[in-house]
Image (cartoon, rainbow, N blue to C red):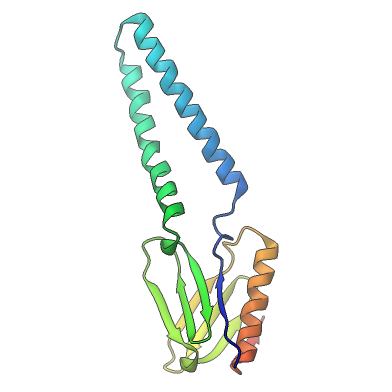
Length: 160
């Protein structure tokens, strides 16, 4: 039997170039705003409530940026679908429980454009959504990989 270990969706969910550009633009804007407010305080030698309000607004955005950096450093907490020769592991999102089961437990697999459903022999259903993928190429490759592995394992495959 062929050994395989495929981690689908590793970068496909997070590789949104527009979101990264918006985040970088926000960081530059906030940095310029902080420098401008600091210069304003130095030049006017004053303290205004608008400065406090804008500074607090900046502090609300800062945790978002820290969380994004933390997720880049810890990819094991990201959404993923990992297919190995032993079984399937997936996580639906951040702070969600990771699910794992063996191929011997899988009775049937439903594969559609937007999702993959693994039906186990004990009637348990595991749904993994594919509609969050940003790239059509990544979506097509993910569906092909799932299809190939399911056929290799001789599991019933239903496509729609």
